[in-house]
Image 1 (tube, rainbow, N blue to C red):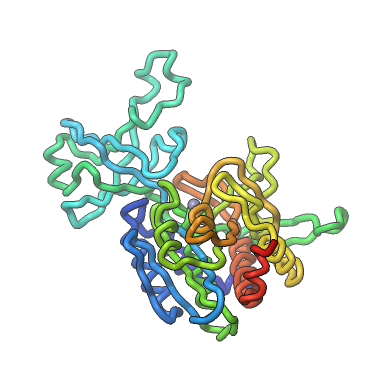
Image 2: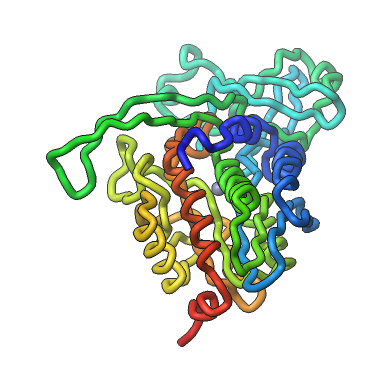
Length: 378
Ligand SMILES: [Zn+2]
C-alpha cells in the first residue's frame, strides 16, 4: 500500500471535524458514516464510542483509536464580552497565546471563532514579561463588548471549543542514509501531514483504513475484529474503558500518536517521525504483554514493514484501559511519532501511517485461538 492509497480526504475531514472530550458527536459521525460501509455491524456504548464489528468467530480483537481531541470549555463570560476558559485534556500554556479557537455555542447554529488573548508585554511590569502567562489569566476574544452580546451568539458557560487549524500536506524530498550502511544514501518522497487533532484522529483513521482493507481485499482471518472509535481519552481513557467492558476483548490494540524524539530539546527518546510505526514497550498506563509484543515485532520484521521500538515515561493510551477489562486482555500500543502534539499543529509522516495499517492487517491475519491463548500461558 503506497502513501497515495491512503484516503487523505478522509483524514482531512476527520482532523478538521469538531470534537473535544465529551463533545465528540460531530467528529464521531464522520467516523461512523465512513466505517459503517466496511462493517458487518455498528455498535455503540453509552459513552459515545462507536464500534465496527467484522467477523464473528474466534478471538475478539479490539482496535481502539480515540476520536476526542484536546480542547477547551468556557467557564465564565466577562461583562466586557471576553470569555474565560479551562482545558479539556492537557494543553501547555505556552502554545496558546495569539492562536485561534472555534467555539460551538449550545444556543446558536453557527460556530464562533475567537482569539486567545492576554495583555501585551508593553503594559506588563518588567518582572512579568519573561514569565509564562498561565491560561487562567488568558481570555478568548470573540469581538463582543458585553456578556449580553456573547450570549446572543448562543454562547453559554460549559460550551466546548477546540483549536482552529486546517489540515494540509507538505511534500518534501528527503535524502537519508540507508539502514545498516552508513555510506549509501537514498532519496525518497515524503508526505507530511500538518493538522490539529492528529491526537487521535490518526488512530481512528488507521483503524478505518484497516477495516477498509479487510473488506475490500476480502481478507480471511479467524477472528472477530472490533474497531472502536473511543471517547474521552484525553481526560482519562474513559470511553475505552466502557467499550472494553462491553466487548470483553481477548486482545487489544490502542493506536495513537506517540511523541517524536527528533525535535530540538528532546534527547533520549527512541521513537522518531519517519522511522516507521512505533511498537511501544510501555508507558505509565500499561506494560504490554511481552509474548504478544514479540510476535508483533517478528511480523513487522518478516514482512519488511518499517518499525521502531518506543517507550514513554509519562502518558498513557486507551490500551491502559483495555488491558484491565474483564479478566485482563493482552494489549499493545501502536504509535505514530508526531511532532508538536497537544497544540494547534501536529506534524507526522504518512509513511509511518501506512506502515501501521500494513502491520495491523498482517497481525490480524495471523492471530487465532491458539496464538492468543499462548500470550498468557505460564
Ligand atoms: Zn491520544
